[in-house]
Length: 395
Image (cartoon, one colour):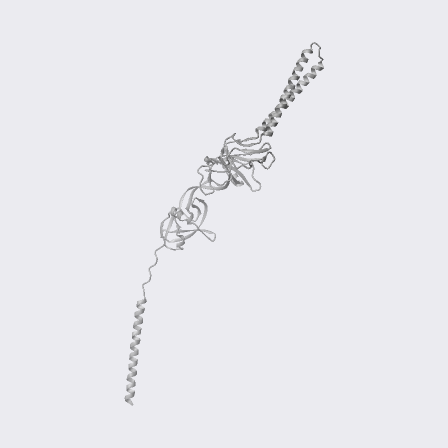
């Protein structure tokens, strides 16, 4: 019995020894695996690369723009002055025409017949006048011989004067008929570009009819640009002109076309209207621009840009460097240690692709113009020079 118990005890001890050995092996394996899974920490990322521009200070001209409407220097409306049927059109629409060039013809038959009748009546009245003068001469010869009475002489004088008046009336009728016949040939009163014909061959045209206006001829070189000035702007320019500090010819008037291109010729002040429009509170001002080749046409919309003043020692940064957040303008300033500071600024006018900074920056400071989305306040950056041309191409 003791032998059996002893044997069981030995076996139980063996089992405990085995379990202890297995546990030790498992612990060793776990520690080994943990050591294998442990890796070195990743190195921090390099500072982001950004493009920075220096705040520059210089004297800049301040521009102002107005939306203008172009109009011909002279716009001649071609009207039918006599009533008749249009039988010919002698010009090509949209082409240059010369002063006196024939544009239209109205059927002249009726007017030619009227002229012939007026000439016939003139000849008859001239014959009557000739007879009256002969009668007056005869009476004046016979009066000294008392072959005729003074009354006969007076009647002869009256008949001669009446016949002369009839001749004048007949001559006026001939002139009028000749003028009416001339109106059947419609010519251009100026050199210019002729517009689209508003009447067609065969239309009945004439004063008071729907087809009285046939076309328009416009002189386009130079061409006028009408711009509206507010009362305040007008008073400012008028005072400056009186003070001779800046004349209207010194404003460098430029024209910006509808496609955004700059017109190569500068303009000059022409005139201001006589009154302010009470409905809009503006006064119309005309600017003249050379128009060789007639590139500009009446009715076009364009912007007129003028230099209204000079701003000395203005601080300038690229427009891309200025952001907006919650109604505030912000720039990312790169400090001497290459850390970033977000700073609020006040902006003034734009000059080309640059902002004028009124408050918040100093000359020589650096601002981020490209890559501002990569940084936060306090971020350290790697600054690179700002390439404006490449940024413009990317846009």
